[in-house]
Image (cartoon, rainbow over all chains, first blue to last red; front, top):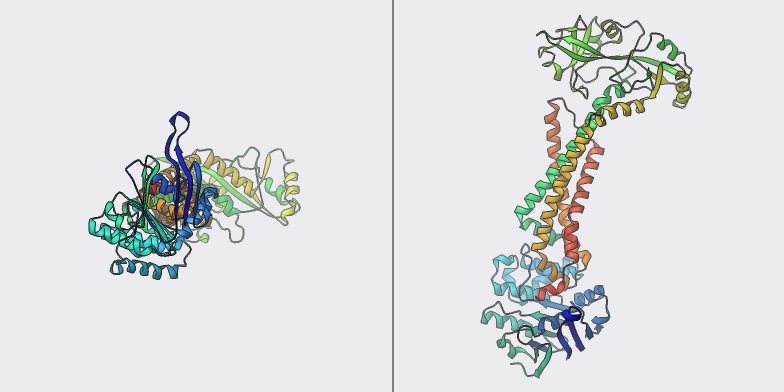
Length: 227
Length: 374
């Protein structure tokens, strides 16, 4: 699913150059939920941005769902993200003017689903995350946990192969955070995978694997049976 | 994207109202100023247009219809003798002075012309008929000039001291005003000659109707051999007259400046609003970019909003322009809002909104999808 080899990232040039990733190599196969942990400044956000194809590393190569992102143009990279990757972020990043169902449906439309099909698919996705009774609510009328569930529904509605998340529970209370992680866990099957950046140790029990970064290097990579 | 764009626009009603008001203001100003410009053009050349004719014969050195010496009495025979001239119609256009009932004096322009079929002078009669001017010493005056000439509201039959002669109002027109707002008085050619002391057959201009338009150069060349005559085709003479008044007086530049000001104000208001809306939604737009939305799809967010503002603001501005048109008509000003003016004005508004969206489109183009992870 994800193969990163010898990935390095340096910001700036010459004397001002700052190296934030050093020769990182990881492989995340289908069926795996991996947590990317580490202290602030360890390079987690940079690494996940590279794995998502949002920024290009200064060294190494990245393959996602059979596409070598580091060899593709920006437009081709966007096409891979559109077709294969779902995103959930720390903030829900929902359009405040749109209802929950419209927020999900409009992303499906961008992903090429016809208008008539997008509505029912969006409703079904929201029902799966327990928001069947909040379809016509705007983000301002939902709680933080409900908004994050809408964001999860938006990410998963198009049935991507890979889910990438960044601190997706950091703004949520404990119970809601666990509910969100259960949704992510349920997403990961034999055909899909997820990589989640987190500081939240409560989430570790959901993971198949915990990768720890420090100073731009992988310092530990532990596989486990999720509980 | 249209749904995201328009609902985001409606969600921020304060910004929406400000932007619609900005576009409406700009559309109104552009349309009214352009309409006034064409109104001034029409006012300055209305008599030439109404009289018609293929060629106009005038005293050499004449630059516009309002300032011309009368031609010699024999010119009528000369022009009628030209081959290909089907009809030569006398046009009298002269300054005259009136003494008002209060004792003051004022200038007017006395106009008379031998009518072509369907082109009787004056037109737009509010009271009276063209035949009412056939009586001795009858003139038509515009309703908007009654107060200035100290005439009663029911002016028919009222006396006017014109060129030290007493004439009477035979008809009242509505909306026929000169560019300079000097009152136009219309009379029959025979009566106008009497009032102005011109000889029989004398005129300020001769409007020539040709048997064939193709013989105009030959007629022109033949008449221009006469050292006292100048010949212009009608469109050329209209252009000379309108250029003298509308451009030469600075009115055109003033109108263009006001229209440009409206355009710039609208541009700034709409540009600022679109940019602010884009900026406030930049995180959500970056999210869409991360999810694979193309630059073109994201630009549609701004372009739909700009299109909506152009449509709604333009429609409101057009409605306001029609209201102003009716309002300024009461003070004798004409705002031309024909298909050309509306098309050009609304086209300018579309261009304005497109220009206003450029900064926002650029902002979207530069959005970093990775921003969503920061």
